[in-house]
Length: 193
Image 1 (cartoon, rainbow, N blue to C red):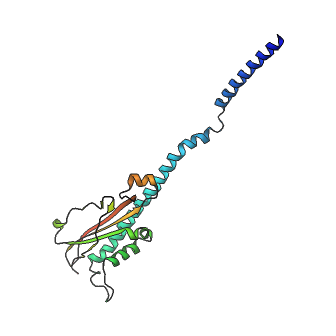
Image 2: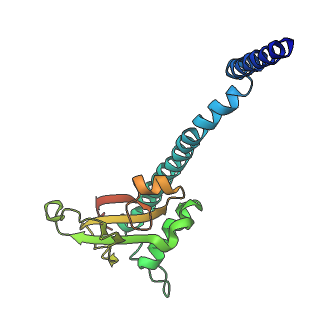
């Protein structure tokens, strides 16, 4: 009989020990911070990366607008018509000048820069803009018509800015390659140069 009591007592003790160890495990708060961080880290990092990436897009757009405004002034004032002999001012030279004014930031998209310079007789003749992207591809044919004195000129420069983060490219990308289109436009009347 004493042996039976001993076995029953050991059995109760091991059941109590299991309950105590389970309660102790659930009550133990060591490592909770690491587990909570593991849940919060992926969305947090995605938000931080999205903020940085969209900030770069906005910075590139501001730099592009400034460069286009500065270089378009060369059309407005007639400098493109009076370039030195042998140094013709054309679309390639205009693009080169935009890249120079872009302070190196726009060099990232130098192969994905689309420029159109259209001349119109009056402001009322300016056509509404067409979509820049068709079927996931950029659809902007290059045009170089800087006009002459007193003509209305519309300069549009679009760039396909590459997005690095896949999720951001899926949400904000305009092309099939996940690029964000940024655009700078200048509309002005040429001076009587």
